[in-house]
Length: 180
Image 1: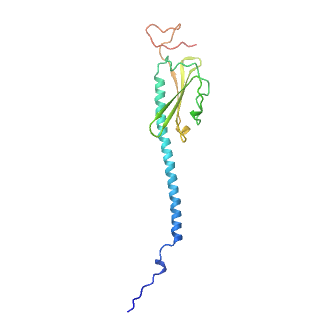
Image 2: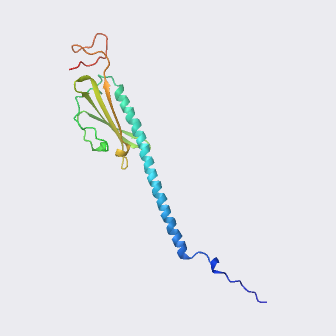
């Protein structure tokens, strides 16, 4: 007896090489899109982390400046030229040091890296008991700069007794400068 081998129908033949290549191309495009999404998410997360560190350090430095006694050398300035603090959107690294301008650089472990902080203290014209403090901080890096900038501004007032004839009243230290 002779055995017959059943013939396979064309519907059970499987995938052709062309179908497999098309599926691979579609899969590659999908993986490229997902990879790009992951890169953008990582960059945004790094900038947000650095922005948080910058805001915390800027706030800490502003609180340090506000806590100084009004007559301390850190708050005594001869007046800074206008335009030392950069306008929003400009990087601190483009500033050239000038009189009346102070800066510090802090290395932060983690994603923030280096943080530049710049501040300017200027007396208010005609108000010897009032000073204006402006502070800008940003993370240094290729994708950071203006994306991580924190800006603070405050007026600092002297609330103690006012100096008379160049001297403080007896037993009352510190005292505020006399108005011009």
